[in-house]
Image (cartoon, rainbow, N blue to C red; front, side):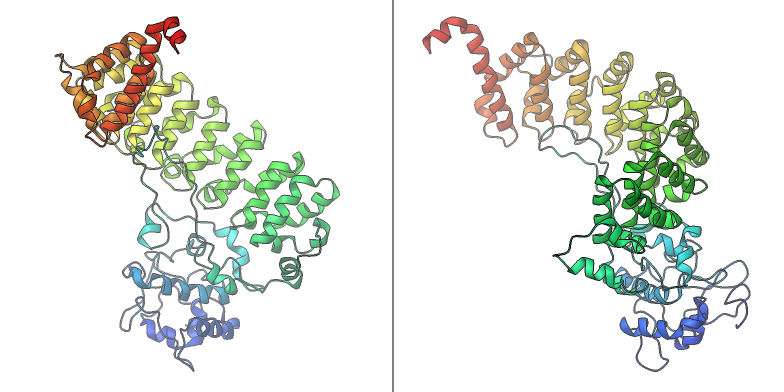
Length: 555
């Protein structure tokens, strides 16, 4: 239809009908004037067999499949077209990249199906790691900051668009591991760079190839935004901002500020914005912070924008902090469960005055167990235990954690929260955790995740708490059967090593007495060898202490 795009009420069409007509294909993406560029981009990607026969990407659109449309919907790729065949997911994304490079994101009223990974109003921004980072001069890509978006939790994996979070399982190669705090990453999209907007200027190309000339910030004036969005150029600006000052940085800032929101969401540009927050003047920080207002939620959910938000919260004044953070009220749970947003909530808890964070703490009530066993939520609950006031912790977290101690101790994420509770909680709460684990110490020590918790009980449970654990390890007989089983176990042997490390001299002597006669048998077991080495070393030290000065003289 020549009016209104292919919006509400558009006739049902097969994908081949759309793809076969470049004019209709261009209209679909809202940019008729750039038809030739679309054909060139598609040909470059091997999507054209000559003439006007533009073929649908293999594994995606197929003849006879109808586009979604009708009232309340938008035309676009069929639901599941991309997710259904991971083998061809890259081809589908490349096809979308070609059209986006030529026409910009889909115009209002005409876009990909909201059920598709590339669909909806936020499609371009959500798939920024696959699509071109810029657009042709005058294209609607320059308006992308008005449509900042995010990918709902789990969608990246379903669409083949992201790497699953690594398991926070136990690495028993040494000490306890804290919950990973890895930042989300994305591919640089090197294969799509040739499609991203206008080609690099001669100055940028010369800068990247000329190894003899020494460049300074004034040399790139007029090209600052372009340099900021280039990997090499961005690194150059960052290095210079750390050591430059005065008029040089003012001139750079004058070019950055009008495109600040765009650079905040750029894979390389976000680092330039962070450097201005870190090394800029107070007026410059205030101007950048002003650009964040009204966009806090969208930026917090965006891969690169969330990093800028975190840096801003570290350096701006308390009043500005509160202005920014208050925009997140009502969205806390959504952010906590998001792969990008959870880092922003963590930074809020770390940097903002606890008295300002009641809206965050209150959002967690009744949800602590669910969050503690969530790969992102567990990190946020740990920050609460570290930084919130005792009354806030009691109000939202402590009781719920204590009521589910055994369940959480055995969870791949929840065990980190119990460990944090033992480290940062009040003594009564720590003793209650140990009392709830009592009777199951050996079983828990042999568990991949719960064994971390038992080690923390030994480390932070005090003399009384350690004695409860040791008594259960020794058992009721001289044979110390529970201790023998633990010394041979792949996880429990680390608990035995920890108890020897932190116990009192009296407790250590009792343990060594029970272990001494078992050492020859332990040498036959893979995990027992670790114990043998530790015990033999301690026995030697103990013998030296007993011999005292007489032993020293004999040496």
